Amino acid sequence: MNLSQPKAIRNQKMRYFFIAGLLVILYVSMFVFDMLFGAKAQGKVQSYSSGDAIVWNNEIYVGSVDTDKLELFKQAGDKLIKEYAISAPDERWNDFYDFAFNIEADVLYAYAVNGKYLYKYNLTDISNPVIVGSVKDNSWDWMMRVQKAGDNIATVGTNGIRIWNNNLMAINSYANQEKNDNITLSRGGEIIFDIKTDYGSDKENDFIKIISSQTRAELASPRIVLNSDRIRQPYYDADKKLAYFAGDRVLKQVNLTTGAVNNFQHISAEGFAVDGIFGKDHFYFTDGIGIVKMNHELKPLSWQHAYKIGLPNAWCMGLKALEQNGQERLAVFNHESIVILDENFKLVASYKATEDNNTPRKPLSMSIDRNRAARNSQVSLRGAGFAPQEEIALIFGRPEIGKMGELVKDIEFSRVVISADEAGRFTKVLTVPDIKLGRFESFPYGVDIIAKGLNSGLRYSIGFTIE
Image (cartoon, rainbow, N blue to C red; front, side, top):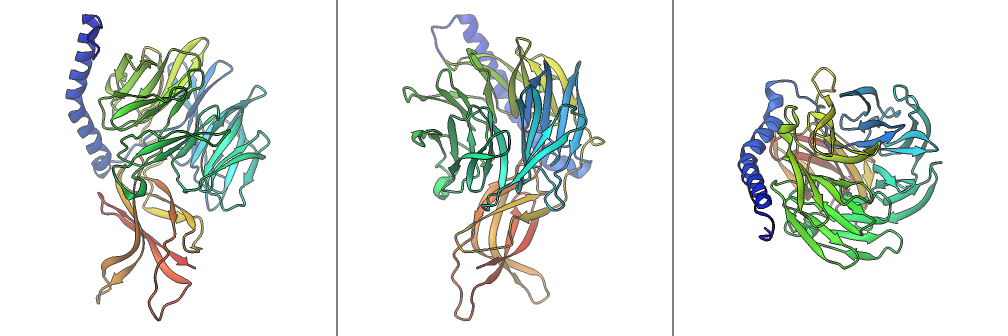
C-alpha cells in the first residue's frame, strides 16, 4: 500500500480488502457447493460465463453460446430480452462453440463456429437471423472459437488462428505449432496471446507468450499462476501498448514498450476477464467475486461485489466494455444472469436464467472430429455432462475386464488432466500417443478414449483406432 496516499483512501482500501477477505471463504464455498451439488436436489439453471456484446444503432445487443445454441438478446428498458436461440445447421455437429458480433456497412452480423464450419448470420431483424454464408475448413482444422480481429474475423482452431474477411475468404493465418487450444488475438488483431498452463506437465510452469501478429516475434513471456486451463480473456490497450491478463492470484500488466511487468493482487482465487474502451484512462476486470475498475497505474478506482448487483447466485466471469451515447456500459456474464451495468456498477438491465427458459444440463456425452488417426497426430475431443469446473482425466487406453464382466481398471497409454467449464463441458486437442505394441499385435490398433470426472466419478469412453 502506498503510504503517501490520503488517509481516507488508505482506510477505504483497507476496508475493501478486509471485508472482501471475510467474504471469500463463505461466498466461494456457497458458490462451489451450489455448482457441484445443487443440481442433485433440483433442476439446474444454465450458467452464463462468456459471450459477446455490441452497440448497434445506439442499442445494446448481447449473445452467448453457453447453452450450445446461439442465444441473442436485446436491451429493452431495464431488461435484456431473449430474441432468438438457434442451433448450428448441421445434423451431426449442431452445437455452437463460440460466436462474435461484427458491424459491416452499418449492418449487424454474427459469426459462429461449430468445429467444422464458420457461419455468418445477418441480424438486421434479430428475432429472425438469416444465414448469409458459411465456410468449411478442409485442412483438418477444428474451429473452436471466433472473435473480431480489427475489421476482420479470426477463428481459433486446432491448426492455429485463421483470419477471414467479410466475404468468408481466408486472408492470413498463424500456425499453432504446439497445438495449444488456449490461444487468442487482441481485439485489433495486433497481438497473439498464447497461454501455457502446466507447460511440460509442470504444474508450476504457467506463462503467457505475447507475440506480434505482424512480425511473429515474441514480445514477452511473463509467468503467471493459473489453476486451470480454461479459456481466459486478455486485454490489449493499443494506445498505451499495455497488455493485461487476469490470473488466479494477480492481475498482470505487461508494458510492451519498456518490457516492464507489474502485478495487482486481487482477492479471489480465480481471474476471468479484462476489457476496456480505447482511449480511456481506466479498464475493468472480473475475478468471480466481483468486478473492479482500475487505472493504468494499477490503482483500483472502484469495485462492486457480485452479490450486491442484486441477482441471486452471481459470479462475475465474462466481461465486455461498451460505449453507448457517450456513456460506458458493461455486459457481465454473471453465472445465472447476464447484466448490463453503468460505469458506477449500477444495474441498467438484466436477463435472469430460469429452469423454464433454459436447456437443462446435458447428459454425459463425448464426441471426436475423427475416429482414427496416426500416431503423434492431433484430434479434437469435446464432452458434456460433467460437474462444473471439475478436473477431468482424458485417457488413451483400454479397459481391463474382470471374469464377471466388470471393469477392473483402465490400462493407460497417455493421460491429460483438464478442467470442465461452468456448464460441465470441455473441448481439448489431444495428441495420439505413439504406443508400443506387443509381439503379436499390430497397427491399426483399437483403443478407447476415456474421460473420467475426478470429482464426480463420472466416466465416458468412445472407440478410437491408432494407425
